Amino acid sequence: MTEQKILEALSNVQEPDLGKDLVTLNMVKDIVINGNAVSFTVVLTTPACPLKDMIRNACINAVKLLVNKEADVTVNFTANTSTNRKDAATILPKVKNIIAVVSGKGGVGKSTVSANLALALAQGGAKVGLMDADIYGPSVPIMFGIRGQRPMMMEIEGKGMIVPIEKYGIKLMSIGLLVDDKNAVVWRGPMASSAIRQFVTEVLWEELDYLIIDMPPGTGDIHLTLVQTVPVTGAVIVTTPQDVALADAKRAVAMFGQAQIKVPIIGLVENMSYFTPAELPDNKYYIFGKDGGKRLAEEYDIAFLGQIPLVQSIREGGDNGLPIMVSEDKITRKAFEDFAGLAARSIAMRNAQYPGTKPLEVFV
Image (tube, rainbow, N blue to C red):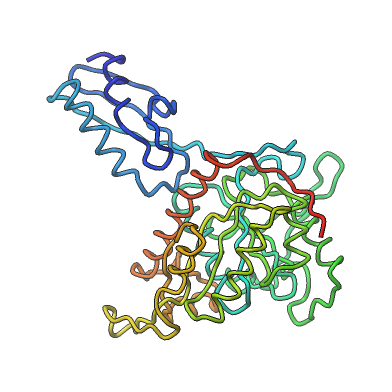
């Protein structure tokens, strides 16, 4: 066995999403050969890649079939999260991907989806931040059990910066951490937009693979401010299966598809897809209709990222500051893990296939 023969064998292993082989993509590193033992490292495009086992098996089979059937093959994994930023990186310079989680209407569980997406990506090995951009209805302090806490300030090169609070391995920032939760935030649009700009320019996010932004419902000032201020990698649309939610989700898809905005849609996730009682874990009751989100994704030819069940433990976890991804509910956690894996794949494909990201000039 030689390094050249190993590389020739691995040139037959395709990266499933990017459509090229591992060697062409320069994803194979650190080949070590010792007798019949060979080890090497595959550099993934995201730590949260759900295809590790498939890639591992394909690599082992390629070496055994094409080089040495007696080979003892060890495949290690590391990740260099892909990014496609083409801006000057003066804002959020160390953040690789900025993901807006949006919905056309309130009440579809967008904050729950944002929180557990962030946690699932972090548990997959990524560096993740979660920014609560819902100025009028911040949920992060409650969902992460940090109500009443206040972020610290730090001076960086003569400028005061807000240090995000860390919980469960991710960095958190919300207007709810800066104001008394008993007081309403009564701001006109320009003030809310100014707060969003501060959240990205005056918060010390540092190095992140993904910054998940929990957007307010609808399509308005804050959405436009975000795409004008930072290079948004893409948007995740959250809906529920019933027609009234789907109609509003279509508006969110349409907003990001407008020629003057043109932010790619990473995919659509259907929340509250079906109800499963704890005492009947194999039963599914489609309270809000069936597969509405899946049909909408097909209609607009966007990736369908999965279905999240309506389960009492999700609601309880959100209220108690213990999101489902840090609970013992393995069945429901699996739904979010699958969703996060598909989202990470879709982000990597977006970075490989679409033009680079940069803040947009929006004239509306």
